[in-house]
Length: 567
Image 1 (tube, rainbow, N blue to C red):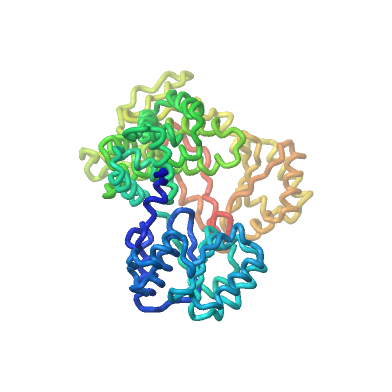
Image 2 (image 1 turned 30 degrees about the vertical axis):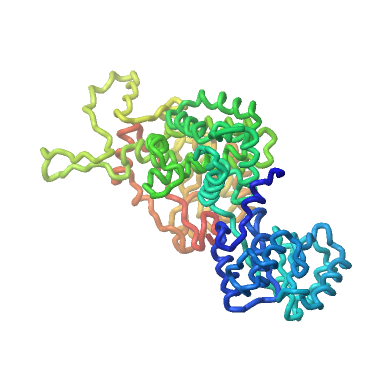
């Protein structure tokens, strides 16, 4: 006897054998049991999830000798003929090869005749979305007022291509993707029936590669059986499917957790040498990181919940593993359409390996926003030590005049290394922020008074300063709503920059300050005095510096997001 493919051999013969379509099966069985038969049904979904099979089972339930019944016997003449596709009263048509309107007219003519033997004349039209517009129009009247003995079952993978006029005349059932664990369980059952030895890891890979399609998964199992010619191992599945196995993904995740960026190029080279899909690899790695997040959260039943996975997840901090997850998701988007996908993948994996070395700023600064405080009423009382507070060490004697003191090493526990060497601001740079020591500001005021008379009073009350980059800062008082409105005009701002260039400045002008009258922030300069803020004192103590200038924060928009747009 010729070999029969597993997808045909294990095609469901009863509703109870269908996998992952519980809602659809229950609705169809209830319709058969209660006799509420609609004249037209649409079965939509991806390939290999049981659309045509459900249509044949429904036809069996309608025409079974014991029916209409939700559980056809499968032994009567009608059930056997439907199973072999020989029934005179159940016509199965492939719309992909019968798109012409003439074929649909033949179906309409056939629907007018009573069944030759059974109760109903059933028309199963597969891939119905392939019909032409004229063919759909020809069906409209028949679907709206069909003969009492005619039932139309329309199966499609692209329901959006079916006209709304057809949708409104039929009941629509959406067949879902079958979950991976359900597919893996079914494959294990098939292997047990075939007396095959298969590793659980191989079944998991096959189910994942099937992407929710039972038929595709059975076809892949057939392919691996031909390759292995014996017990099916996970290594054989990895080889024939062209994917990275779970062991390889876990090894890569352990390298990323250890910060071993040097292992990434070799891994990517092996990936390319084997011709494996980069998109599939990224999808599998993202799924593994998701399992690691679930393992950290203690979610029961997470996929791949094993000891090695939990051990690998424990090597990441919560922040690191979430940022790794976000990085992989962003890489999947960037990989689409990029001209050099392998280089992008290698770059992102190296970046992922360096992610654990980055610490959040609040941990780096030792909870600057909430520094330990001493009780002034008890000078001898010990200071409470917070969980992440920066330890204070006794300061040594001041260095001789003219000699710069060396930078103190950061407290123990800091994982921070400056990329750009730190340099304190010297006196000349500090004086550049002061109004009275820059002749260019005096020239700017004089020329602005002649060129822009409307801004004279505004500039008199404003504090002018020039930063080291040559940008002129105009700090308006919080109560100067008129000045803010005047300087908000683009033409006046351009004229102000022209005056600044004539005064010897590079030209850029930055206007600072807000209007309380306009409903904006009323933060005053006195409320930002750094000596009154212990967080600022702690920053100065940790990093060694001094306050040069205090600037009020920008106002928040009234109506939404950061650019004044509704969120």
